[in-house]
Length: 308
Image (cartoon, rainbow, N blue to C red; front, side, top):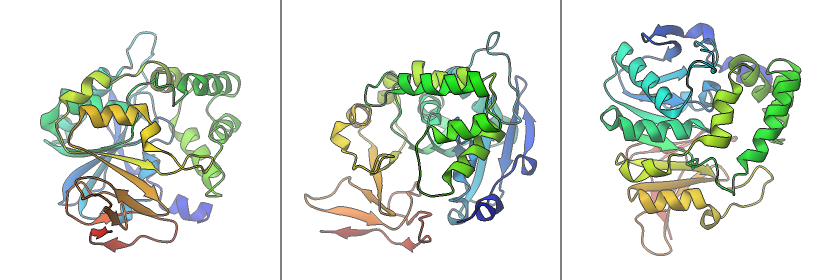
């Protein structure tokens, strides 16, 4: 993939609109269609752009997305006078859904937006069909080391901002070298979506204060944790060495977990010993349906099968 390729797939801000919720104006994009609504909650760094690559493979859904307060063209109230916490973000999303006339939607959250999605699913379960999320439930999880990450992030923003060279340095701080276009892509995401004035209110929240551990047992909607099978450095991740994921399993009996392994989503749930379900693609919210993933070698559609 070249820069021209990922830019061609990009849902630019010009393609969306501002929706006045009565509290803030929020950037919103609706791809249209008659399918069930699926709302993308982008991470607070990559923004909604992180879902550009999967859109072509989710044609059965009405794809919705936004930028929360403090990001992109959405209003950026002064954090010194206006709170940026998970309850406020959840109320913003509730008000946006009301304004656009969506009574219920599936949610797919990435990065720190997972905190928000989990809180929203607890506060407004009647608005959520099913949830795809990451295993971010507690900023203080020692496995994540988010406090140390924040110190690096904060220092870059203070010295260089979130535009131009600042955006590139922030993208480089992730240490991702594969795919080769990642640095340019993530730099563009940060440059277009982040604002130095609200970074601490959002990224700081995710790294230092966010905590939805007490929400987990109250969330009853079907929930999938979607995670990579390897770390950024390429080493294999052991699910048993993940306190946040183990806590989710303990408190959410409906939870399923899918790990992307070499372009294949592997789901271990409800199977006999020694079996696993291998699906060519991403979880599509309805158990038993087909699953799609945008993999490097091109996406494939396949019915779920059992491997022994």
